[in-house]
Image 1 (cartoon, rainbow, N blue to C red):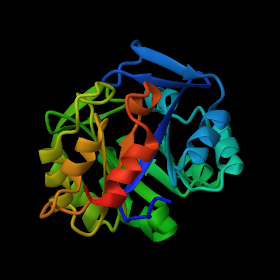
Image 2 (image 1 turned 135 degrees about the vertical axis):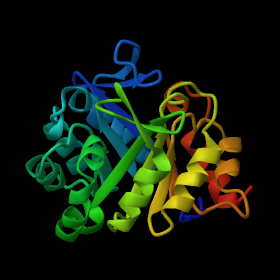
Image 3 (image 1 turned 180 degrees about the vertical axis):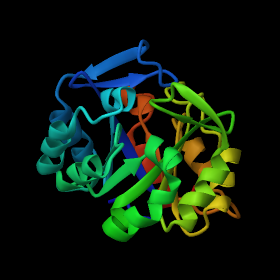
Length: 250
């Protein structure tokens, strides 16, 4: 049995047109379909040993309003493990609807950037069920489904979220996402240092046990986990291998 650790491996399910897909660098026109049944895929990752699942409503992110809330509800209902989800949450009503699905965490991306003054209020209302997703290219925050690059540094948004009491930050290097080339470790650590009170989850390019070793290296800022997507779907690595690496401290 694999020993549980504070560092969690999150298999990712990205939802587009009701199917499970992976994009290259977040480009909607560059999608690979890996399954037509998100619930079956979620059950698969639970059976493989996942202890937490990461869901992204890609259509919601691109359109600016949730598109897969009911699918997320079905996934949550089918699992015994918690789920975090985001994509297109722009209003209090969107956020409440996602939390009402039973999702353990609801991830704010574009809204966290556009309305940072609302984060403290939302944390007061929803507590640690509110997470912030910081997506960045070359260190600059991207919003609206990664279609718009801002001038704001990822670390600055992380400081804002941390000061507002946000418990979890998911940092994604969009240039590395879906490329199987490894995470941007330096920027992940910079975000973690900028948000010392929040748990930071690394995303984008995480694809080998060596990536996990780099993210958990002694002396580095502690992270809460890493999201793994394409490498699992392409079967270049197994969830068990990733989790064994964490448990073994290798």
